[in-house]
Length: 295
Image 1 (cartoon, rainbow, N blue to C red):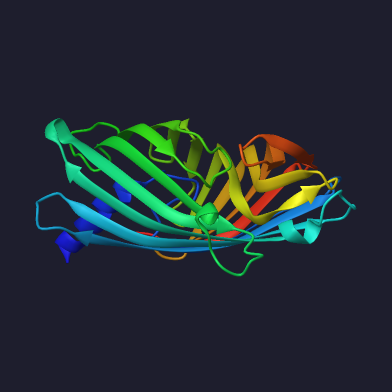
Image 2 (cartoon, rainbow, N blue to C red):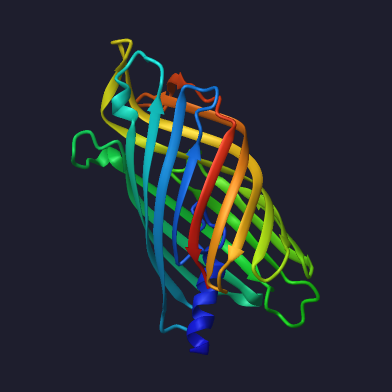
């Protein structure tokens, strides 16, 4: 049992902070909403994921398999120059395949490939245009459990690409974690940063800033002003706020966050991924709540 827990922990460290889905969770379901406010669009997302780590024969090597599903809805009030029903509902599904092994000097290599699809599915079947590919390569040094470390810390360096996070181009992945006080820790990096207050074993508060969004194919495209043909939609967000966590047990956690959107863009794009129509992106409030199973 001790070896099994250690195996799980290594996999969790390997994928911690890998993406906005927080793949360190073994299982999670959450709900996100951007209320309409003064804008013309309301955005909501229901998301569920499951990850399973597998210990391999080679010492220190692990494989992780998982599924990540989302249903996204856009509700528009105005009368745009296109059929708004075609962008009202999106289905997203990713298959996570990750591998990690030990290197020299306490470093660890992590590689993740995530094939999937993201589409409005108006044709009721999938095509190659619906397929998205994401991937990450990172190097990790973890001293959170090292008895010789005066203050627990970890460092992750690498590169990350996702065709389905709203920023569809390679990004550097940098994450430096340190617990500098029994009740305080921080995580500095890209694509997210946070400062966490450990109020007790059950209650935690976190100030954070991060990137979010999604990209999806528009099957058969949609005509704008009866002339321009949009082939995909892209939403990108830069946000920051406060998250509260309640730990029912060591492994089960409830969380709720409220964020302010510092930057937002929602665009319909042509086949060359050029923006051809900007949708209302004046939402300023971002709310999310959910429950997760962690190690």
